Image (tube, rainbow, N blue to C red; front, top):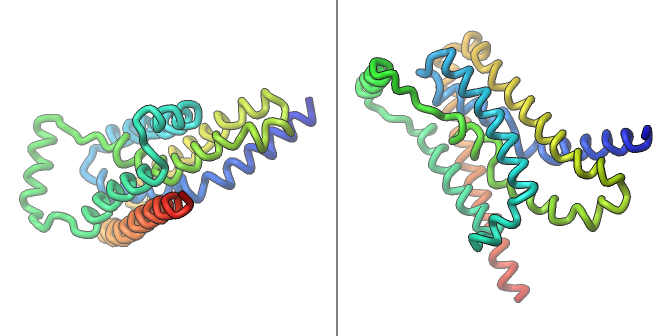
Length: 227
């Protein structure tokens, strides 16, 4: 039993090391700072918790059914990367070039608050593609496809079965903790700092989106070249 627990610790550590650079909660935290600044505090905290469950749910579904879903709809990994890149680029451009009509936006916010219509950003863009983006999904699907041949023979079956759920749950907890601390960051850096970070992060998101598209196109070229 002790050996199995050691194996579990190794696999969980390996999974976190592989997933954290892709499922970076700081990306979603910046999105929350820029897109959720007009959302009331209680509602924002509720959406943060909701988004954390979405992140874990997306990763679990992707691990167990992602390959089947993509095969059913005829979606390839390059197609996933390109589509995800376009979504990320759209969000990034909206952050780099926000609407210049400040009075109109303030009026829209006032109308929304009066009608109790608060935008829900929990699923898009906080969970998808903020944290569980195309790179994360592609990594999970490719990892699940190669798990049986590379890991299952060297580890206990229950360790292999439990590890993905633990890894995804830890990532969801880190995501929740980072977004819960976003309010303290706003109090420290102020509104001007939030806007500056939003524009910088928007530019980085556009760069990431372009790289997603480039990777997808290169994979398509390699597939046709090999064929």
